[in-house]
Structure formats: C-alpha cells, structure tokens
Length: 298
Image 1: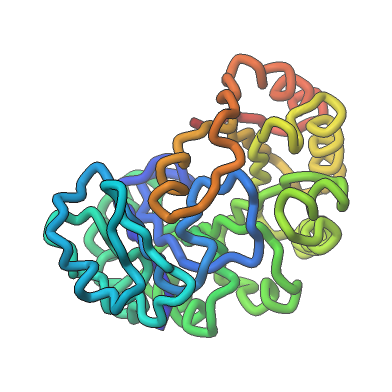
Image 2: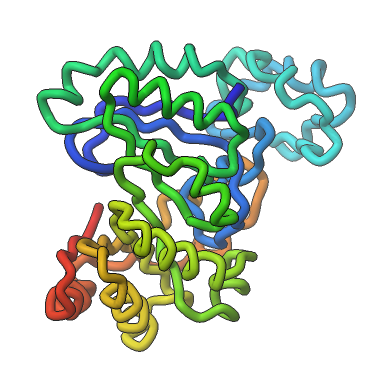
C-alpha cells in the first residue's frame, strides 16, 4: 500500500506535457514555507475549514472528548486523536476533513490510465510528488515498474533528502528527476528545513555521475535563499554539474496560509510578501551565462 493525499489530473507544470500528479504523504523535511503542509506527516491529517462549518456537531459526538466547541469555533486535540481516519466522512458540510489515505498500486493505476491518450499526444506522463515519494515503502518501486510496462513517462519531484542507496534502487525507472536545490549552506538549510544540506548536495553529485536526467528546481524564499549571494551560489553549484541542463526558479507565494490554519499549525510566512517573477529575471540571465537553460515557474 502507498500513502497519498491527492491525485491531480491534467497538470502542465510538473514535467513535460500533460501529466497526472500523484501526491504522496510523508516527508523527511519540515520546510517552514511548505506549500503542501498536509503532506509532511505520513499519517492522515485532520483539517478544519471554519468557513464551511454549520455547527451540526457530528464531529464533536465522534471525537470522544477530543473535539470541543467554544467561541464559535472548534478546538481539535489532534495530538490525542488516535484514529483520525474514523472522522473522514463524519462532517456533512465538509468543514472537517481528513487528508491522506493508503491506496493500492492498482487504485493508482486505474486513475492514471484514464489519460494515457493525453500523455502520448503531448509527451506527458505521470509525476510522483509529495511530500517525498522516495520516503515511501517498497510498493513505490512496484508502481514504477507497472507504469513503465505501460510505456508511461515517469518524473519524480524530490527533495533528494534520502539515503543515496534509496535513490539507487530506482535506477532505470525514473525518466526525469525534478530535484530541489534549496540552499548550499548547511547551517541555513538545517535551520529552515530541519534537514542535512550535505546529503542533498552529495546526492546531486551522484545523480550527475550516473548520467541521470534531472532538472534542478529552486524555491525562492525570502529570508532563506532570496539574496544575490545565495542564489548565485546555488546557480554556481548547478552549473558545476556536467549533466545539469536546466534550472527552474519557483517564486514564493503565501497561498498555503489557509492550509496551515486548517491544520491548526502556525505559518511563519503568513505575512511575507510574494516574490515577483520580474525580480528573478537577473538570475535567469546569470544562469544562462553559466550554460543553463533557466525558467521561472508559476
């Protein structure tokens, strides 16, 4: 079984052509700006959208004292709810929902196969995203094998924050790695993501040595890596990889703010202004001078 929280069809921003994106649940990092905060925890997550609440109180009855009302809102003791999945369909208005579930390989394949025609006519395929796909169990490999049997192109959006031995298990199965290069400074990386930058940088070098096809993706985050020195350092590292051909810049936006509120989590970037595409043009030009094809993604 595989842990997912969404399957999105007709995507055009997660690899070449028309794609179906499978979003896996669970990530070894905890990036302060994460656009998919519901993906971090590998287990089902309880979300509450107060705007939809009609005070039916079905959730309170099912919550065994862990969900209470007061001051025209709900108080959800998420840490002490042992079986979040039991609340999945309890709310008639959809205000309280549970995101994340275990699904079989066949369930994913049935959804993916609906758009095989579009993959073939557009040069698209399936993108495995997250969360961190490589943090899944061994069934992920079986899913990829089945996709390849059907001739479906496979891209993987990854932080590369997993042991190299894990990535190596998928040798020959991944067509394109869409790999995040968030920072080159270990201290800053650890402070904002809880992770190990050296692990990521070394995995980039090993991917490069194997001749794997990868596209480098840089989330541009104010206060983290959004400075000339830091972005130039990232571009220089990318340009030093002999098989690096393309780098994508992903400008920060605060659209995830509502998701954090629904999860009962604090969003430290809630008051941070968006990064404009026009402000990144000089980095596109710099990357181009370094021999990289550069693009700013939406």
